[in-house]
Length: 315
Image 1 (cartoon, rainbow, N blue to C red):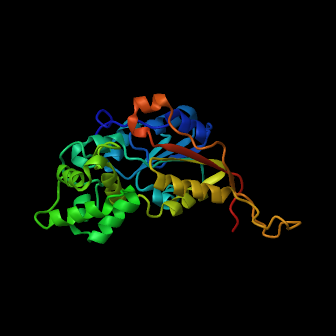
Image 2: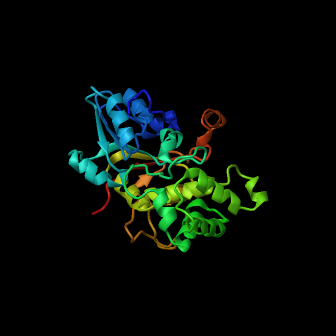
Image 3: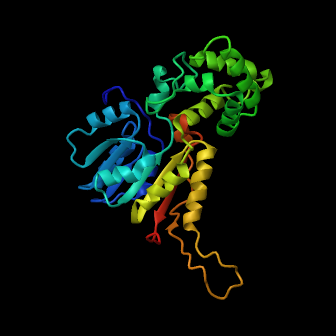
């Protein structure tokens, strides 16, 4: 995997780097570096600072190592951003001035058929970002009906979750489901005809739900946000890009919790709880404009949120 054949369109490229408020000489972490677009934009403003580019996808890591070869400012790490504390400890980094986490799937992962993320091409049913561990085929062929139903309902917000899960279980009794095309056809046949004509490809929500489950995208997300925030220096910023409402709700709620101060009843003459806000929101959530959507239709549901640490956390 080389820099020549790894393709990814960064979402909120300039907006994300602006939100981080990159300063020369600072320490910045791109937790989901992927194709390196955001990382390169950070480096343009970084001067003699330090950038740590992290990704769980080994193909992305290989690409990043080629892209940044010879740049002493960059350290490429094969890892999961949910292990950010361990990653920084291993690099002897005490704190970061900015952390970026783009929680979406990369264009490369979607557009490479053999990775099994897309319902547009017939390929092995994989969907693993890390290319390790159980894949989507194992999930759909072994999970009980109730588990499949709940995954499709909770992670895909699929209102026909029960019917789709039932059809999957019935189909796998005849032969294993190992193909993206076979799964897409099962989903399509499980949904009423009027619903199939609305909202794009009927398999979209099912594939999203299975991808989230396979990669554990929502598991431990709040804890990961807490770890990333904890790794910031005072005045450091954490910027997160989400692509579906489940992620965004978690990020929004976590940011709000860090920005809340005194919790004493309004009629108390003085504060007795001692709680102070640990952060502030430098701007409202950003959404893609029309040009961004025209250039990259996949970014339509994206949101960018940023939080700035204003004081050290109490012990």
